Length: 609
Image 1: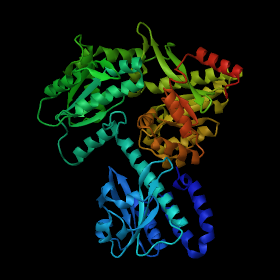
Image 2 (image 1 turned 90 degrees about the vertical axis):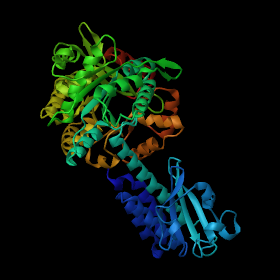
Image 3 (image 1 turned 120 degrees about the vertical axis):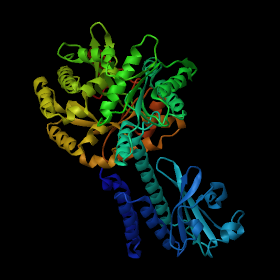
Image 4 (image 1 turned 30 degrees about the vertical axis):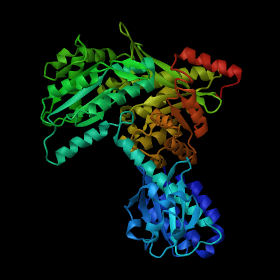
């Protein structure tokens, strides 16, 4: 999003509040601070402006901003004339910083216990005023402290000092949000391991440095996690993955580890141990039972090892490692370690057979769409559905989306399957529209679809052949798909939006984008990934609240995914989410059940559709 828009409300407030003091020049100083915030200037530059204004407002005092970092008060910025102990990157334990306890009071340092050491190093400053910095989400992030040569005036703190305190808190909150998004761009948020993008960068860095590539890639597939997730729920499944990742990383040989899609972890081992030995140690680490929420869980693992080959990219390397893992998975005695060799493709019929069956599945009528409700907050009125693809394979039954969707993306079949999903969703939505149940229907669009030359024609054909009102079709595009080619995505989204189609940015916060990029995208709403709900386990969700607040400043509704408990629902009401989607308010269901629900709510007067 455009930073000026992000802080439009704060900018307007600053102009209103500073207008009476224009003669003193204070509004220009505050305007400069807001400009630094709006243009996302470095944190040290913005805080440097703030402490300078604070020092001048206090009559030539020394001002500093402390940030609360890892249980330490780190000096983030200090005005001119500050003594060495008060300049970045100095850090002080809060218990040893008496100004941390002031909470908006001013005291004479020579007359207060605990001040003696600082009174002697303050360069003639005898008084101190300080107050803590609190974000709009209620998080304490530091303090603004001013050392004065004389007692402060009657108005302490001054109105301007209060504004500076708010600005400092906003600057730190913004910097923390950017840093968190940067972390999310490189890490898997469930396990804390690196993600695939960072794995690719690691390989490229080794190549640019002239070093040899790692001798082998070890792929760990934790097959039991999918079963746990289906039976015990997403939270327990995620807890299993976190514990498994922790066990792997405690092994000295683990080296660089990244979680890929689903339940796979790719490892570039350290040390001189043979890949087979490393695989055996990994299996041993995962063999002991996992104790989660009172359950004793055994997670069956399969490990595929692929040695490095000259000129091979990561996708090709992973393909060979996955083939080896599939061969290990097919063995009767369960989780084993298999090293890839040229005959593995013949020994891994499972994956090859699945790919064969998947080709043409849409034409044979094997694909289905299930519809998961999206409901309003508060009230739980039905707002729309997300169409989710299912595959009923003859002789096999329902195949898990976690098994066939990655395969479809890898083989390019997702373009054909996505074309079918668009047509089927529009056809079904048109039937509901004709029945007086005009429910918004969201359809997922993959990165390959978005980049496909025929994508726009596919959407137009689906709308034309079905007769659906375009505004009832919402295309859900993940931020990672958008970031692959932001310019192309923006052009195609804008062209389709002119037809009336709406867009949701899906899985927001899990990739490399941020709210700042929304200025280039014609997005109608944000879908926030369920990983943000993990903040609620600590009682508060400052990052989720910040995203919701900033999205609302842009006029964007927010859907939070993965809501499974009443406690999470209550938190969504408190945080101001517009809609939620999750097992609490509705499982994915066939079209007939979705229609029955819509009819029931319409009769009861509870639906917004």
